[in-house]
Length: 316
Image (cartoon, rainbow, N blue to C red; front, side, top):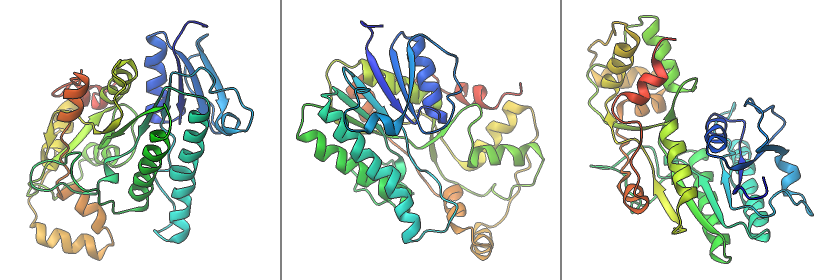
C-alpha cells in the first residue's frame, strides 16, 4: 500500500462516488473514502480505507497526509423545501462551506491536486444558439447552481495562493444503472405505457454516462501536465426529448406512446400545475461542448452512441 498513489474521495457513498471508487480500486490506487454516516456499499479491499468526512477535516487529522489527489464529490443537490433563505443556507452549508474547509485542509496538507465535481447548473439552465462553452458567462438559476458556482470561485481563490492544482468539471445530467431523478421517472412512464404529449418538442440536451464521467475523472488524475482549469464534460451525443424517449423504449423493447400536443397549451398546463421549471427542462435546449476537455486531455468518451443507454436501460 505504501507505494500506491493515494486518492481521497468525498461523497464516496453516492452514485458517482461508488462507481469511481470501484474503478480506482480496479486500477490499483490506494483509496480513502470519506463518508457521512452512511455505509459504503462496495466490496471490501485492502486498498480501501473509510473515514468520516468530519474527522478528516478536524485539526490535527492526518487522513489527508501524502495525498496525490482529492476528488470532491460531496454535495447537496436537492431540498425538501421551496427555494427560500433557509433553503439557500442548506445548500451553502454543504456546497460552499464544506468545500472551503476541505480545500483549506488540502492546501495545509500539500495535496497535489483537487478535482471538483461541479455541475452544468453553475452555468445555467439553457444553452444559447449552439452549445455552452467554458467562455460563456455563468448564469445559475437555482440555489444548487448558485452555491456550486460560489464553490468553484472559492477553489480558484484558495488554490491560486498555493501549490495545489485544481480541476473543475461541469457535467450535465448523469445517467447510468440505478440512477435516480428525471430519467428514471421517464423510464417508469414509458414502462407503464403512459401517453407522453411531448412529440412536438424540438430541442437538444446533453447527458453523460456515469462510466464516461468516471473515465474522465481518472484521466484527469493520471494527467502529468497538472492542468488547472474549469471544463465542461459530456457525452458526444445530443438528443431531443422525443428521441430520448424513443431510444429508451427501443432498448427496453417497449412501444413508446409519444403523442402530439401543442407546446403552447402544454406550457400553460404545466404553469397551471406549478411545474413550469420541469416543462423548461424537458422542452428547452441544454447542449454542452466537451471539445476543450477532449483537446487538453486527449480524451474521448469510451462509451459512445447507444452503449451507455443500453447499459443503463436494458432489461435485466
